[in-house]
Length: 95
Image (tube, rainbow, N blue to C red; front, side, top):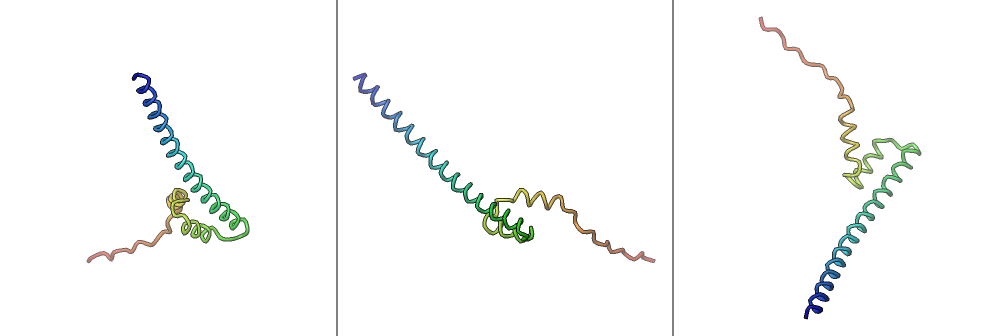
């Protein structure tokens, strides 16, 4: 009887481990797919920049294909780019 219980526990452990390994393999496969897609997008963008296409157009294309891909870079650029100064209208002094 004890042997049957031990074998049952071992089978449950085997099944549990197999389930976890299969789940993680799925996650790894999905991550690899996402990384390969990002690599294709970035490789094409680098080629376009090297061949003279403007950064704005390349960035727009990247955003269209994968909005999250360079979001941190875009946020940084917006932060670092100085805003153009606009003249402040003067209020006429009341008499």
